Image (tube, rainbow, N blue to C red; front, side):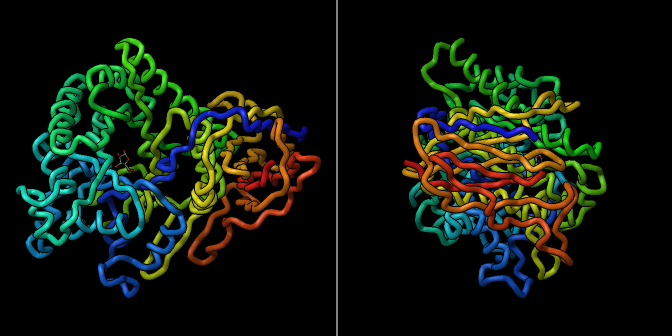
Length: 500
Ligand code: AHR
């Protein structure tokens, strides 16, 4: 393959990288919570019922924001069912995933865990079957000092200090007919506006996320977003977007080009935000909250997504391979390249349900997608601004997503360092890449890791858990202030370089 030249001039700054793009998502769905992160019966559980091995694996991902309690689950959830003495909490019918919800994990368990893990909690209120009042009471429970009804309830439940939850989502995927309480855009905007007003009356410091379009294929794509932003604009800070991708046709080259549409998805919604800002002559720019994203296509059928009245059945348990890991890296590259627009992003999800971490009995499996996530989020400290990469190199035509370069790049500049993230999409060729830091000079490669394998279908199993992992990478050097690297086929590499 012809050499690729990447210009990463420290002067070509896009915007600061918001650390909240390295976020996660925990839904009451399948074995994400019960039998996943929270499993009091497990021999590996701590005194609070959390799986120690799962927490350790999550700790290594350094997640920032974590969204809770859904997802589709949120649209039927009444938060007061999940607080107070556990033996008094109801077992409830759960309609989104057709499960039984035992309510043994709720607001206090989640927020206690978030404190312990250093996560920034992000709560989705129920705008499906809930009311504005129920949402504003939840804000009082979480954020108000003692002295009024719901804040005192929190104190009675053991948390004297307010939790200070800053980020709140006004419902989930309310544009989708599958959503409990789905509404047309105008009606959603009205309900969300009433809810936002009451929530901010309780705590004016909170930040709100309006529901944007949940898929690119829905009939109201972008029109929903325009209507919602025109109406709710003054009351919200962010608008959400979701994206799940997959390779149902088994065409790896085509699949790896899907990141073109991730860029497009972000740019479409950012364009609507700017259109509404211009139309309403507003000073306020709305930013994007990519609060669900991942690979999800193998377990979308009824068998995998309907709980048939069970508590914590195995639902949406995807097993990920090498090509999925490269696509996950592609999502994060895209978020960094759009650092001016994307301020929050949450991989969906964290444990067992379309997740980087899987459990089976007392065993734990780190899936292929775990490794790129860790390679990015471990580099968020010390990184400050996203750089605009200028990539000159060979490309190919993908049947579904158009032309795409073999090498996909993002970069973050810090104080005397640059983090560079690169994917080689070629199925069978090494790619020689020269990275030119413009007017600056690289001094040395401080660290580098690679995720690769011999086949796009390579994956980790309980029997062979270390097939697709990150390994230290040595095929790079600095020559005359530029970095020269050779990326193996089907690989993702993360570097940290020192720069003058
Ligand atoms: O993450 C799984 C589901 O995908 C979420 O509950 C929903 O919001 C989306 O459709």
